[in-house]
Image (cartoon, rainbow, N blue to C red; front, side, top):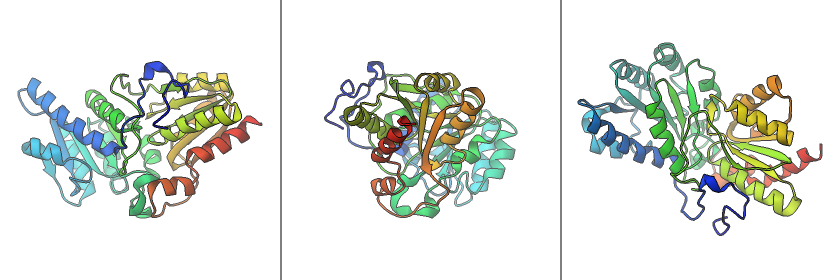
Length: 337
């Protein structure tokens, strides 16, 4: 893929995609953007505005650079996730912007009720960062591979859910959620994943990016699996003469209804792709939208009512049929219907 230009893949030129860089984890993009935000907001405010709150995972969630740069704006609560989000809510109540982070299996996993009651019910301006999400966590195994977090978070009133696709987009998303006033859940990966976006397109919460236009089928993906969707679209065209629209749906809530419905009307077939249970995640959100507005043939690719397991990230994507090869297989089948 790195030797193929975006233009040869049929990708939209205005998206400024770049396949020439080495893989990098989305959590690293968050960590770098958080430091940038700290500097920016400190420069224009009389008192500190950005705070980081962590539950004994400072290095793992990439808050270590922020801690070093702004030690008085960093709060370590220890292994106490319920306390973690409640402290974040209190900081927000004082007019600050807290970024609260842990592994997604533990936050929202261990503290959903506190998120619901102290943050969402009060519409507090807390940014919840769930790291190490999805199958691509790899060797950490099933206990640490959060596959249900999108479903639990998007069900909460007032909550925004964002799943960036790579390092660069995560930096842009982190800055965008800082500007947004209200609760946000930002879902991040542990392992290094392909970089393909750049800093040029603006990141707009609730606005999906159409990376490629096609006429036969639409591939809607979120997170690092957007890259698998791009690869699948290229294979579909080269080997099967199937023209696929590719949509990077980085915001699961609020969903970009107009873009998705428009794509469904045009291609009449939809495949959703995600590192999450097919129930309640991106696939569930898209299916709900289309069933009420424009019933469409749809295939949800994700984890199907199963826990993860230990393994290398790409190995697990293949086993759970989340890779480009399986996307192509399902797309060919759907196009025959």
